[in-house]
Image (cartoon, rainbow, N blue to C red; front, side, top):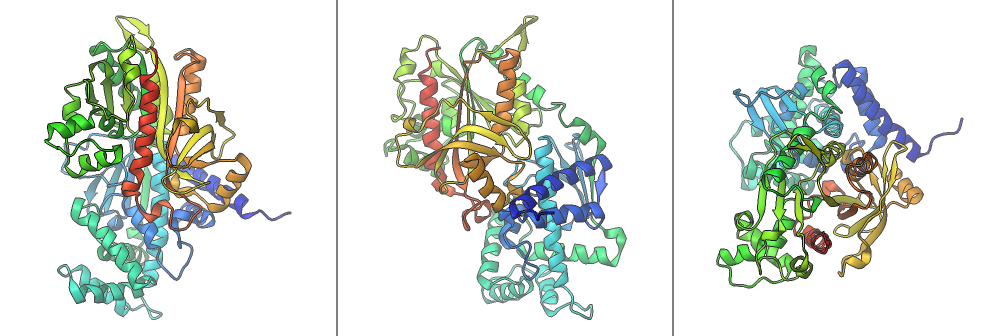
Length: 561
C-alpha cells in the first residue's frame, strides 16, 4: 500500500475534522479528553494549519495563533469548562453578560463564571470556526499545564510567580519586564515574542475589554486543565443543541433578512428600478459617494485629495459620512434577523452635484434615463452567503402578486488569501472551486485587469472557497495552486455563485445579469509573516479596497438601465 503524500494526509485531516464536528452535532456533545475530542485534535495536528504556527511543537506555546483565536472568541472563554452552542435567542432580557469578540460578528452570553453560550446564526461555517478555535485552545492549554508542575507534581517556581502576578495590581516598568521574563520561560518563547503578544492583547483589553490580558489568559488556561485532571467533574464539555442542528439549512435567518430588504425597497418606491447588489464592507461605497461632501460639511478646507488621503482624513476626524448620505439617498438597513449582516440602500437619483469623489466618473449617471439603486450588504460568513443570496434573489410578494426585483448586477468584493503574490494585491475570479467537494463554478466575471488603471498588481484565475481560514495547510494550498491554477482562497464566493446559478435556472434573475468578483489580498498563507496571524493590514488595505469599489461603482453607473 503506497504511503499518502503530505498533501493527501492534510486533505484527509480536513475531511476528518469536518466529519468529527458533524458527528458531534448528531451526538449533541463532546469532551476534548474523550475519543471524539482526541480525534479532532489529531486531525488539527495532522493538518497543522499555517495560522497556528508552532502548535505541533511540544516545547513552546504558540503565541501568534493564540492572539488570532482570542480576538475571535469571547472574553472569558479561557475560564469556561462548559460551552453551549445553540440557535436559541431570548437571552436579551436576562442578566447574562452579552459579549461580542472584536474580530468576529458573533454573540455570546456568559451564563456563569465557567459557562458560556454561543448563539449560532450563521450556519455550519460558524460552527466549524468555533470548534477549530476551541480545539486549538485545548491543545495549547495542555502544553501550559505540563509546564505548571514539575516531575514531582509540585507547582513550578514560574507558575507560582505567575499566580502572584494574576492576583496583584497591574505591573509596570521593571516589575513588568521581570514578570514577562518569567512568563517567557514558562511559555518556551523569547522575551521579545512574549512582550509583543502581551502588548497586542493589552491594546484589546484596554480599548474594548475584549480579553483578560496575557497573564490571566495563560493562568486560567493552565489552571482549567489542571483542575480537570484533579477531578473529572471539572472536565471541559461542549454541547450542540438539537435545535441548532435542526436549524442548519432551513434559512431561519436568511428569509426574514431578505424580506426586510425587499419591504424597504417597496416602501421607498424603488422595487421596479434597476438594482445592483454589492457584497462588501459598509464604508467604501458611501465614502466614495458622500465623503467629499461630508468633509466639507465638517469644515475641512484641505481639499478632497486622492481617495486614500480622503479616507484617512475621514477616519482621523471621525466624520459622519452617513449623516450627509441620509440627505441624499442613503438608507441604512440594520439587521433585525440575527444574520449580523447590515445593509445600505442607495438611490443614485438623489446624489447631489459635487458630492462624490472627483476621481469617480459620474458622467454616465447624469445621462442615464433610469438611474440605478445600489444595495450594499455587509460580508457574509462562509456558507451563510448561499442562504442570504438565495433568499435575496427570490421573488417577493407585492399587492398579492409575486414580483421579481429588477436585478442588473451582483458584485462580490472580499478579503482573500493570495497564492500568487503579496498582501495588498488584487485577485479577479474566473471560477470558484469549493474545497472538499466536487463543486466548481466558472464565473462570467465582468471585471478584467484592464479595468484597473493602477500600480497594484492584478491576478486573474480560479479562487478556492475554503471551509475556514483556520483549516488551511501549506501542502494542500500548493497542490490547489498547481492543479487548479488558483490565485487565491476565500470563504464565500463559491456559495454566492451557487445561489446565483440556482436563481438563473429558476428564472428569478435573467441569465445576462452581470457578475463581478474582486478580492484584495489580506494575507498570503504560503509566506511566513504574511498569514492572518501576523495581524491586520491597517492602512495598507485602503488602496486595493477603494480601487475595487471605484471600479464597481463606475460599472454600475454606466449601466443603461
